[in-house]
Amino acid sequence: MRTAEISDLLGVSLKWVEPGATKRDAMALITVTTKSTEKSILISPRDLFLVDAKNYVLAPQERKDMKRSSSIKILRRFLKIVNWILLAILSFFTILLATNTAQARVVLTDSMSPKIKPGDVVISVSTKIKTPKIGDVVTYTGKKFDGTPVALFTHRVIGGDLTTGLVVKGDRNQNPDVQHPTLNDIQGVVLFTMPFIGLLLTPQNLTLILFAFFGLWLIFDALRLSKQ
View (cartoon, rainbow, N blue to C red):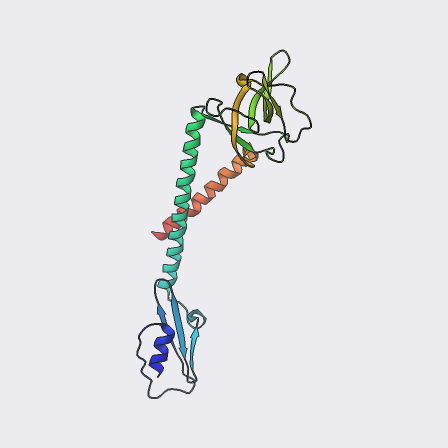
């Protein structure tokens, strides 16, 4: 009877031989471990109970080392995949920026809030790749009335055309810009925005990031040496 109950509870075929003489309070613990599951039953004079083995015995050191080694292996694999993805993204953008196919600029004002905020980085492409139209956000060279360049502005196109000039306006501004930029004035058409990245591009923050990466490198190097 005990054999059938044990087999049913553990899900494996086991044969239980009842001891001939035992103490009244004697108990036995049987644990069956597979790659994905672990089941344990406690055999007492009264009944059989499904239990958690770690509440009754200490796991052998080799099992602890195996679990620790498995966790470290999964973490390393995850970090390796993340590193390759980041490297691929950085390489892709480096090629685009180096060939002037795309531009990256940090937004300094809140004229486009809340869509684009100060500290965001806007990624734009040349007008040869994407022709600006109404609704697009463009970066253009602002000029004085005598034609002297002043600064770059990133605002939304709300009207006009490329021949007579586009009507542009910051989302937060009440009135359109005085200047109506033509195709020659437009440096790029914004594709997407990377929030807050520009806030990290300061000497202090870059130093902190450098030290953080150095610290992480030391930690992973120590883990690698401990495995050896």
